[in-house]
Image (cartoon, rainbow, N blue to C red; front, side):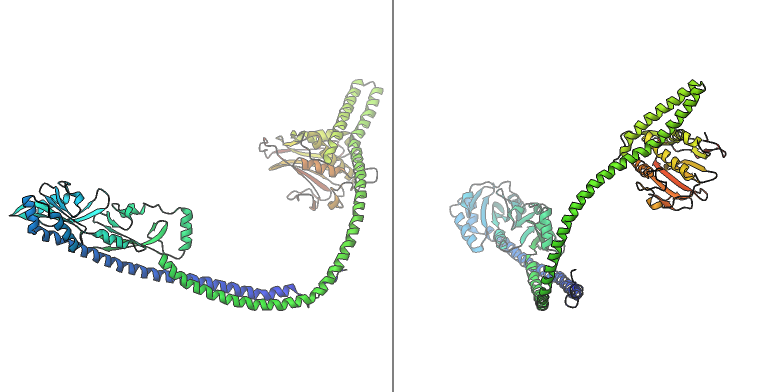
Length: 618
């Protein structure tokens, strides 16, 4: 035998108990680390986001000041040029040879975007961009308004080439009469270009909600809502990835190029304009991640130290295990010898199993021959009785009655042939010849089959049957075979009783239940009742296969066959309760599922009984 390991030197359970506190401590540390990182991330994100928003507001205030300064500086230029005598003389004399050069000089001094001079017909007669000379602006809003108002007019209009031009226009008067219009364009595009160098997107929105300046060129002329839709929001996958990256941020104000941004606005003290800025969370995330990296590094160093201490302890335990490896190798050698011995035993067992298999084949042949003998015994006994009766009838010259006996013998021969065909159902599932059978008719047919045995004795047979048909799906011959086996067992059990009685009760509820009770001595061993070849009869009187075959047949029908003594002790697949049969005797119950077309049976039943000495109650 294999000797067990010495529990003093190797105890896996004690090692497991020692490791539990370490595992628990590790889990606690990881939970503390996760909570610390979460709280730190949330707090720093809010703080840095507020800081970023404040810096953006300061920057927008600076941008606002630059815009107002540029507009105010440009607004005084038209008044200065409107009083220029040289320009007035050029418009009066229609001599513009030196006008453009004078406008170019003025542009350099004031850093305007462009300066144009128009006559009263709206034709451009002088300009800093000489390629435009001769262009007619008679329908331009800033030209019409300047002639009407006779003062400096501000106009923001859309260029044909795209974008917005911001101009101040003023009528030029000579002796109180308008001789032309001077137009000065503010260079706000330079401010727009300077904003483009930063990471955020900046736009200027007029009082109508239209974007007139923007670092994103495609936004110009759109509303803010339309501008945000220029690039669609990210798809579900990118949104999930973005949400993972910004897992502690507040919900973003908008999405730009698939990136969450915060929106900041500032009012411009000019014509209801507004500055709108969109800033990404990248700077916030970078600063927060830097702090989180330090925290995570600290926890990682702490865990590394903890794992180092644990590894030292593991090395000590490893040395102890190495000392025990010698015993384990010796044990392995002993186990190998035992395995070899068991392999030899298994080879011998295989030879014995082959011998047993051959013996099982011979036993199966004997079992089938015994079953044939048992099932054909009843028809043969009935045939013998009918032949004796026919002989007496012929001797008494009662030929017609003798012919009836011969007809019954012929029926029994057909039944014997059917029984030999059905005996193989003991070893396989049936169902090939199922049909709708009325259990009441099957009981009557079985009693008719048992009539010769019943006439040989005085037995009281009591039948309690419903008035309505009790339909089940079964093989009629095999069903009658089961009922006959139960009746024969009841008759055999009452041989030693002074007043033998057999009660047959058929009920129909959720299923059909046939109960058969006798007043014999009962069953001595319920546990072995349905085993093949187990019998309480004397040698030659029974094979012990009747109940085993009957149980198999009922199981093929989807039902159950149970048995118990009248005192209530049961055996089988289901315990029978709630029924009183008196004291003494055995009770067999056969439960079968009702056919689908079976209607609910009425509660009324009739009971027929025969007095002591009668044969069968019809």
